[in-house]
Amino acid sequence: MSGQYLVLLFLFGGVFSVEVQRPRGVPLSKRPLYEEDKPFTCLDGSRTIPFDRVNDDYCDCQDGSDEPGTAACPHGSFHCTNAGFRPTFIPSSRVNDGICDCCDATDEYNSGADCQNTCRDLWRKEKESMEKLAEIAKEGFLLKQQLIQEANRGLEEKKSKLTDVQNSKKDLEEKVEALRMVKETAEQPEKEAKDRHLKAWEEQKAVIRMEKDKARMAEVFLELDGDGDGFVSVAELLSHSELDQNSDGSFTEAEAQELLGGVDKLDTAGFESIWSKIKEKYMSGSNTDAPAPVEPPQEEVKEPASDNDSEPYPDDDNPEEEEEEEDEEDDDEMDDGDYKSPPPTETHEKKDDDEDGTMPPYDEETQKLIDAAQKARDEFDEAEKSLREVDDNIRNLEKEISFDFGPSVEFAYLYSQCYELTTGEYVYRLCPFNRVSQKPKYGGSETNLGSWGKWAGPEDNIYSVMKYEHGTGCWQGPNRSTTVKLTCGTETVVTSTSEPSRCEYLMEFTSPAVCQEPPPMSQEPPPMTSDHGHDEL
Image (cartoon, one colour):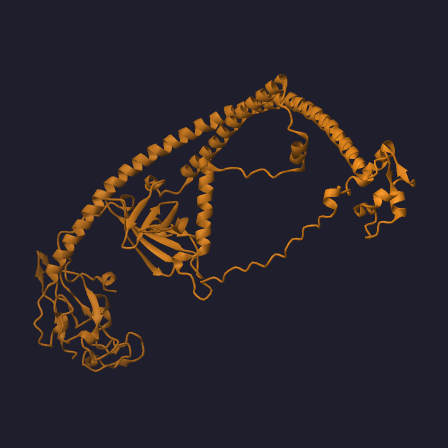
């Protein structure tokens, strides 16, 4: 149908159009490729045909470019001019199928379908929608300017505060060093006094032990001296087989005599010379017949088989996560000052104190030295704690000052803030530049969906996407992560959440900081003869 052309004469909204002749279904951008007085070459270059075979309802080109205005080619495309609205392409299979696809009805030129030109109505509706978006963008952009001003003021205040804190740190460091010297000076006489006290106590304990040892020796001598003649004889020793020196199970007279120093019997003075050899092994008469306690063999305790051996954990029931969360809770409790040191293990020294009595309290002079040293330690510890807090403050200020809050620090107001969205099952929590989390709505442990990673938008709009990474690991899967897409809005709010892929979450987040100044809107529809090549594809 080479003689059939689309003649466009249009007068709409005060915009005059020009007459343009071209084959039906061909966009203006490709009009030069369709010359009536020349053979037509398929756009893929596969072949050349006479021009009268263009739009003849028979497919000659593999790419369908010879039938832009018919449904003959399965891979062809039809260009809707849509005068007064927005040009577009539809598959050529929809041409003359009885359904109105083009708003100007040009796709149903031969189907008999009753199509109305709705382009103007579509343009009006789109214009209203764009005006609303432009109004939001305008209001959001004004809010953004306020945010930038406040952020810059806050940035200057933080820089000033950082300078003040750094200066105060120098004074505090000098104070800490001075208190350290005071502490060390006070601790030296304290240590000497405590050492003297301890030495005196050790000497006193040695005397007590010696007296106890002598009393024990006298008691054993009397027990061994069965006939009461004032001597311990070989025969009397033989009644105590536990004194066998080589522990071979046979305590002979020769061994007993050897134990007595080669004599047949010893008096009290002589017994004192061998006391060290027998006092550890000797058992009094009341214990010689008592059999040694035998510990029953301990049965191997078998743990019950896990109920989960045959069933994988669901994503949110990872036991490793629960252990980590319990550990975190324990850490929090300790941080709150509830930490209690474990009970001290009973030492040999403590046992000796129980046997020899408790160490007497320090004398008044020593206690004064201890109190003075403790006061110096407390003051030093308090100053050192203040210095650590100052160091933390400096690090936090330096981090916040150097943080990438956007080209004009417009996102700075989000720092240290959190925003929540409640769905049917979960409460999602976004703390910008920190982390994203998920918690069951009706109770349960919180799951980390990712910690702050980076700005991850395209090169021309990098601040449109946030990436949060390395969250809690999924059961037999990757670590959770969240992508946060930012759009312009007058309010700062999480609008939606989803999980497009397993353990990979998507959040929609609106903020005035994203808004750009809207360009002025055209009040007239686009003229029909303009080449809208960029909009067609």
